[in-house]
Image (cartoon, rainbow, N blue to C red; front, side, top):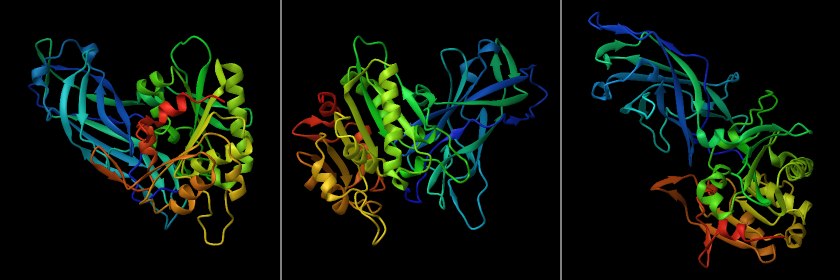
Length: 415
C-alpha cells in the first residue's frame, strides 16, 4: 500500500567513496593520510537511519580520548534518488544537511565513533526516499563528508587526517539476512537461526506496497523490505528467537506490489516456502505468514489459496475490499468465511489508508475463530505514527488477548 507522503522512511546505499579534504593549522605534528569510514545504521520503527559514523583509526595507534569532542569533526550528508525523477513528480526525503555530532568516542578496537543526532520523524538521516508517482521506497544514494576541525593526539603526537573515504553502510540486523533469488526470479532475504536441534519454524513476512519493485524503472533492490520498517526484523530479534526456539525468517520482495495480482504472486511465494523447506531443517507444520497493508491482503490470499500450508496468519491493516470506489473486492466474503487457518488481525482505528471497518473488522467478523487487536492510534515510545503503521505493534510483540501475546500465540500453533 502506498505510504502517507509524510513518510520519512528509510534506506541507503553506502554510496561511492565520499572524499573530504582537510585544512588544518601548520602546527600539527603528523598527518594520518587516508582514513576510511563506515556508515552505521539502525532500522527504527519508522525506517532506517544512519545513527553514527565509524572512522577506521585503530591502525593509527592509541588515541587520547580526551582530544575527542563533539566539535573535533563535522559531518555533512547528502541523499539523492538513485533513479531519475520525472518533471512534476516528487520524492521524499532527499536532503543536503549538516548532521549534528552528539558524541565522539573510541570503540573497543580503537576506532573513532561519531554519534549523530537522530529520532523518529527527523529529516536528514534516513536511507530511503519515497517516490510519489510510484508509491515506492527506493534506496537513496548517500554521500557523507567528514571534516576534521581540530587535531587528535595519537601516541603523544597531534595528528590531522588528510583524507576521508566513505565505505559501506552497516546495519547488523539487516546484514544478518542473506540475499537470494527464486527459480521464478522473485528476490528474497533470509534469516537463519543459530544452531538448534530438530526442525525449526519459518516466518514468512510479506511487505507493504511501498517496498515492492519500482517498475517500469527496472528498480528491484531486495533491500527496502528490511529497511522501511521492523516487520521482518522483529522476528529475528533475540526475544523472538527465544519465543520461537529459533526460527527462520524469509522476506520475499514483489516484482511490483502484491495487490496488482495476488493470484499470480501466491504460487511464487509458495515456491520460495517449499524450496526453503526442502533445503533447510524447517518444520512444515510451523510455517507462519505475516504481512502488512498490501502484505496483509497477501497473507489472507495465501490462506485462501493454500488452506493447509500455514500454521497461523497475521494480516496487519490488510486490504479486503477495494480501495477504489466501485473496484473489485480483493477477498470475497465466501473466501473469508472458508478460512480455517488460525488468524489474528491487527489494525488501528485512525488508519485512513486502509480503513479498518470495511477491511480488518469485516474480515474478523467472517473468519471463523479469528482474533483481532484494534488500536486507537499507532504510538510507540511516545511518538505517534500514521494510523496505517500498525505493523509496528506486531514487530514489538505488543498485541495480546487474555494475557497471551501474538508471538507466543504463533509459536504454540501447529498444523
